[in-house]
Image (cartoon, rainbow, N blue to C red):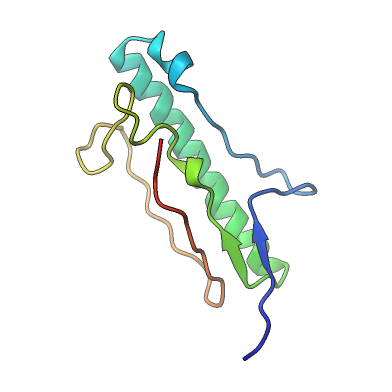
Length: 109
């Protein structure tokens, strides 16, 4: 079995940053504004996830651990949302290059 190096979460020399949101900050917004803010963050995070996977592929890194806050506050009881309910506008689907494993932790708040 060949050893496969991977990357977890942080890029120091690439312009890839993942955004987050706290339940406290979201709770100060109206529900429509919460969903708009979360949608903006999720879209930015998915675009950066695609850039991250493309970068690790370009660098010859065989795995990239997907961060749990890609979808921030997803399961939170007060400010959470459902991706399958269409509650966030604009769906995005991405794939990953062959040879790059992309394990992810369970979604959580």
